[in-house]
Amino acid sequence: MTAPLPERNDIRIAVIGLGYVGLPLAAAFGRTYPTVGFDIDAARVEQLRRHHDQTLEMSEEELRASTHLECTADAEALRRCNVFIVTVPTPIDEYKRPDLRPLESASRTVGRAISRGGVAIFESTVYPGATEEVCVPIIERESGLRFNEDFHAGYSPERINPGDKEHRLETILKVTSGSTPAAADFVDALYASVITAGTHKASSIRVAEAAKVIENTQRDVNIALINELALIFGRLGIDTHEVLEAAGTKWNFLPFRPGLVGGHCIGVDPYYLTHKAQQIGYHPEVILAGRRINDSMGGHVAQRVVKLMQQRGLHTAGARVLILGLAFKENCPDLRNTRVTDIIDELRTYNVAVDVHDPWVSPAQAQHEYGISPVAEPAQGQYDAVILAVSHRQFVALGADGVRAFGKPGSVVFDVKRALPRDAVDGCL
Ligand SMILES: NC(=O)c1ccc[n+]([C@@H]2O[C@H](COP(=O)([O-])OP(=O)(O)OC[C@H]3O[C@@H](n4cnc5c(N)ncnc54)[C@H](O)[C@@H]3O)[C@@H](O)[C@H]2O)c1
Image (cartoon, rainbow, N blue to C red; front, side, top):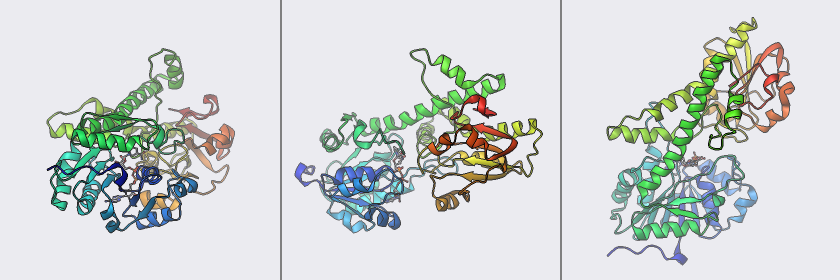
């Protein structure tokens, strides 16, 4: 007989992986349900127990309000749970192939803790099929339970946006799915009980997986198109933003902007889809072309800056350049897959000495991840060029004069984000 799903009044939730996605989710469930938040990073767990979230997604008050949430690095605590939600990273390796090791490891953790009637729900972004082809067999193997008879599965992708205080977990409509119609109803009702914006029940786990991965692929390809236009208009001497402003007056012109595409999602998720496509013998063209263009933008920015310097007679070898911003996006400390490093790497090939200033990021993390020691307070009047790479509000508040003040007289100011007036800078995308 198929094991019954947990009763509504006997739901005990485990959230596995307490990062940008897992913590807000654990906190939301922990306001209503007994919830165990599990992470292998003991230091992170220790901070969360003190109600401090270094990702800045959750305030101390919000964490304290989650009165039924207990954070732990001890997997034993998961044994008392009957719903397991996996929110671990899904990065790519150096060959840009999906690195499923965290997901596989978390599936083993679930397999060791789950018992009859349990439900394993995955939130990590994957390719269509990954939950049932990769994760479920691991849970079966570890637990000795049979899928869809002894335990059930679901997939509910996350849509949060780091640093975005307007679109929060509860206010973003959530896609849900399950491995059987009953499991899908269970998963949908569970999320509907905490997501005020409502839910959309997809017809299968694979549909929900595919929906998530194309949300970010669509953004990536659209930004790549605008980046390609910026490369063309730059050569034509036309201001890309003026073109976009004019074209944007048409009702169906989409408002994308050129720029670096970094972070844990948009620059990574398309590779999950292209990996699966290639596995089944289809070689994606548009998606990978978009990825190549977006990945080339950091190098392009550096070359534009070098050209502007040379046009002014500034020697690049030995020059000092200040980069404002290292995080992958504005007003958040997230350094994952930041493409600002491409600007730095390219500038260094010209023997330029690069300083980076970013008041949002952890200097220890910048050093650990990228070997970069950010400058806490850049000196004024010292640099041959200043690149505004990330439009943190502190940099925007400086204004063009404040940004230019870091440079020597006659230095170059390049505005990647178009955060400053065009006529106050020397170049922009
Ligand atoms: N950050 C976003 O904006 C966002 C948005 C939508 C979807 N996603 C997806 O959600 C998933 C998680 O992303 P994130 O940004 O929260 O990642 P993250 O790096 O912020 O957090 C992941 C956490 O999981 C922990 N972890 C890693 N392996 C583990 C394991 N085996 N067991 C337990 N804990 C483990 C890490 O220590 C870390 O604290 C990814 O698949 C990502 O693509 C992220």
